[in-house]
View 1 (cartoon, one colour):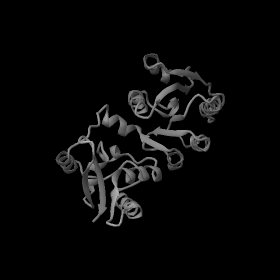
View 2: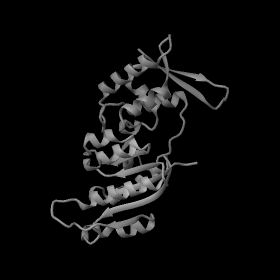
View 3: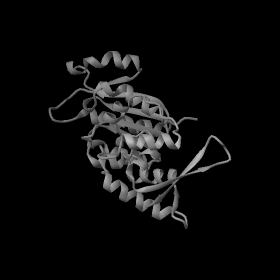
View 4: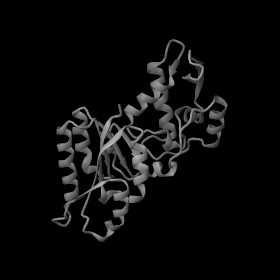
Length: 252
């Protein structure tokens, strides 16, 4: 059964152009049970949202700006998040904002055992990114579009890695640091021959760096991204299922 996820959107800190990509991404993690967006809908600049909210069945929550310089929208979103948490109707939250004010909320929800996915632009402060279990950059989601991730044959992986080498990143890890971190993880979990299961390396990397996503580096999958780093050996091993192969990684 899919995880039930409450999607809470800060309209003051996200553009409507990202909505399609947000919900496409959420579908990879679970089912959006709550879909709420917060803002002062009396403001003319939010008028363009109307059709989008109707088409996607997103509930707009009105929050007046009572005092200049005070963000009442943030407070309304936080209060609703806690109400939803205590209702026991969801297993996770998606907080869509580039605002660091939600850092403590993300931390509190995770303390309660919730999966917390953050989504925001590249300008999002690192404390909020680190507080989430996973963090997705909206610009990256939009650039990748609805591209379907497919399992690649070894030769195809090599070709893709040649096309898009990792040179820069939108996230915390640059190329040099990424290689260093992967080397360290492989050393920690490898067998006596130095080989580590690539999927385990990817899982640990995601836990240590919530905003790690192969799409940040121009690749749909982990294997071609690692190949493009040109710092590791990759081995494919057959399983009892002829359609499935396991990938292993070793430091060079």
